[in-house]
Length: 472
Image 1 (cartoon, helix red, strand yellow):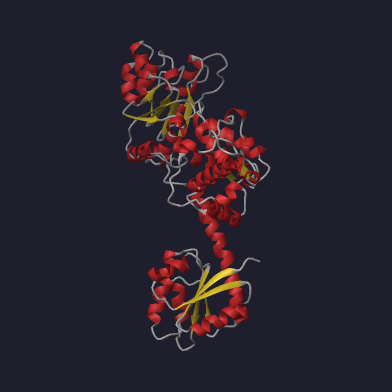
Image 2 (tube, rainbow, N blue to C red):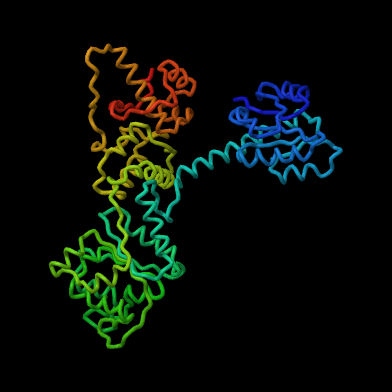
């Protein structure tokens, strides 16, 4: 069992040392008389639980310390030692953030049990918080995630226009997430409690699109045995999302234009006008201005539906979003397929970032799902990715260098790159490399790696390492 690091904050150093010895080998203890959080920086980086002695003259200072530690270190369990002469002190300590209280001097068996349970609970909460941060990442717009400044600016614009009842045109390549953006706008609008009706105009006959959008009356054509409501009518009071609007026949475009201008339409086979109140959001991967010049799209309809235009950039232009999106897709796929996959190896992550992604976010999602299905452990490696993402080795040894020098430089570059990618978190870096944390510390010392050292991407190793044997 790994010992729990416990810090005793007490002015009675003898008491703290005695309790520490009595707790036994399951706990590593340190004693301090400090009463200011700013003076406890070194200890706070080490401790996993804190015991604060409140049975002293300045009880207010002790309670303040409980509050400051719980605020600065929310995943640190605090146990307060309370003297019997201070009635109600236990409640005050709990209100200030203490996990539990115990009489002073404490029953060692009871204190040991409290500390062990508290450590397990807060360790689980800390890991849950880390996973939530990993999955959720930076601010997002509903189901859209991004790190890049371009997408964050797009999110802010979408949030600004969503409450305003204006028509929106979303442009971008196939697979960039145009429908997800449309749904996010709807969910952030005043129509969020009303229906969002989606329809794709892509590669459908003109008559079928007209029937799908506007519906028909009974007997309107052969086979029309009952009246049918169209998508426009179904979206009344809500949002109508038309994907691939550039594929809509120019014959049908005037009828859609009338809906936007007059808020009225007729079903097929009927002369009765139906009033509707809809917000139109359209999407296309085509250049509508060029289509207007070639008389393939109506200019008046274009300006009616293009009150605000949002452009989704392709994934190759925002590669910094790839790690975040990959982690989101990994978590979703692991849950869906009941797999234990949790992370990517540095080599796999680099391959994902270097790929051009012609299919954009949709291609990335399918690739991650495939990798999760094929992965047999907790870490997705390069071998789990499609062959198109596995680039051949392009690392060329320096002229005149020995075998030992090349191996040393390779290890150094690999570890340095992994540390940078993991934010210099040693435990996370060790997991990514598949080695023990202690061994990673020895390698850092042996290879003289410094935290302030800049990573040189031009000389980073191109050999993809999938097993820890490369570091042995």
